[in-house]
Length: 446
Image 1: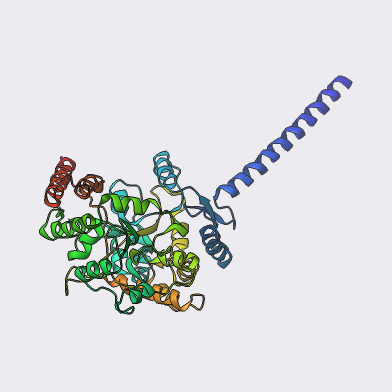
Image 2: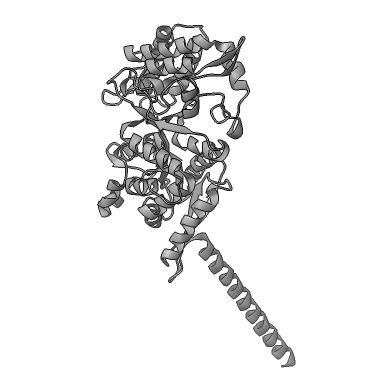
């Protein structure tokens, strides 16, 4: 009997111990479930938001927006995951293929359609049907860039536009009206040469370089408001007459200074304090609107103006080029409904205005951009530039990568370089680029 009792007691202790182990495991699994974002009886759904904003400037700004959203409601918690530029998109594709993507990601605006075609992002049509007012927040050009076959696959977040900056003191020194910038290419060339300062064979200051800040592609867009691709006709127009004229003008301007002068001049400069315009070595420059932050931070009270890009000729228009980023829900995201709620917040006025003011960034939300232009946090010069940039959005063209020709830019760029180096004429170079892109389109239709 004693033996039986001992055996029963031993079994009872073993059973109790085993129950405790199971309870502990259950508790741990419950904790793991909570941290993974799965919902359980009132627990918040955790969504993972991927960006490449990891700098000491931008990371605190996006995380403040996330924190504000998290505090604004009690159902969703956004977690920010920073991945370096480039890596974020490589890992995005890998995670989609593995079936474990982020819930929301910042991605390139010009390739939304390609990702949609490849089933890499989520069609947002049902969400826009549920919240139809959302699409009216944005500059039309930006919203249209997020469409594929008529449906939205992302929402635009921010953008940019190219402007002309000039040094007013240098204009006055050269006998030019400091308040009247060049309005055409001919005026830009004429004023630029008057602003040159040369001692012997060396330029101490250059008036303007047409490939400083922007390149031939932007000048072609500026020339006729089209550029390389006719999106209505769905075909390449790389070698059309206006593009040949634009590249010829740029090549002639380039040759005026010569490859040796331009390369030695550019070799002196890099980023930030070494920018030639900021350093007083260039009188006119063309660049993204937030180039202003370099002037603000390193220009030591520079007296400058800002204006749209000059027109090819009077009346031809001042078309500029812009890019930008979107926020999209990767295909296969575990919590698309909750991601949509944060996506709406991220692109609404409050978050967009905060991002715009703190980063001096042109945001996609029109109302937020207009509010930011008058922000008390901007200096009068800052307001001038930001207002000029938002106004310039009316004539800023985006160039989404054509579905028929992915990576077509990589076929054009070598030809442009060959032209600038004198190895081909502008017409020869653009004809070669046209042929290469047409062959690419044919191969993709097979």
